[in-house]
Image (cartoon, rainbow, N blue to C red):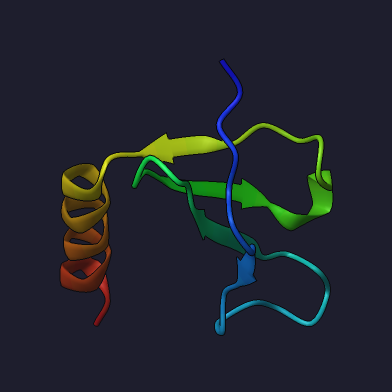
Length: 64
């Protein structure tokens, strides 16, 4: 099964050199993350809402 995502948004913290992530929500409520350099056909890391919240919390707690 291929997950369909809505509009992909680029991270506001992206580098000017193209090193960035894109994030989108699927119709099923999962959150997809992909590397913008890979284009539309690149792999997508798929998170549940709960996994995404834990992931974001761990990033925020690691940031000085």
